[in-house]
Image (tube, rainbow, N blue to C red):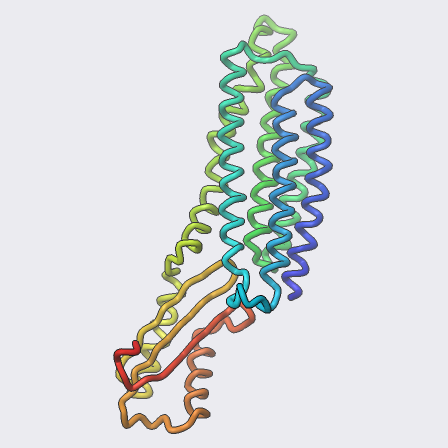
Length: 302
């Protein structure tokens, strides 16, 4: 619960800073005449909305499953939101790339570089400060939402850093024989960055889709099988089947053990003792783990 509270505090801080950055983007974009800065502001505004959605889901998944319609809890919503969030960032990168190409074909854009560079410095400071702060705290929290949010700050800060370089280069070119190239600096760097940064959320989307599709995580499956092979040999059971899945921060483990009809398990207490043995060997006990272990003498139940 402490990690969940820390996660929610970080997301609230991120939303507040993002709203400030978005406001700066729109204001400085209008003052400088830069479509790239306006886009940066819109990017930040949409990112704030995504962070708000992540905060809502973070609160939702920590609730006790009291709703009869969602008896297994709300864990499945988490990877859905991560996929939507990452997919939105990918689409924004694609849109920024198309916007930059359109600006290049149109002959670039004349800017007030003083306003543009002032914006880039302020926003870079805010973005990288949030990235390092969230990354440091998330080493303890281990939240996918905070990790994605930190990646988003890194993406925004990197884009803005490139914008600063482009603005500084364009301002320098204005006083040289290559002044006609100054309007191309901004869209050229933005196009290059979007091609690189689009790969940042791809990993998150891929992992989220694996959880949505209930693809078995190989590490957890191997761990459960290793433990059960040892238990079967130690207690001289017949065989077992196991099924594992990871959905958001929740782990679902289901184990069915086939025992001989003359099995020495003759009480519920003894069966519970074997369950505790298996649970401790697997590890990771907590409110996010759903572990089901049953015993049967009929292999048809496996």
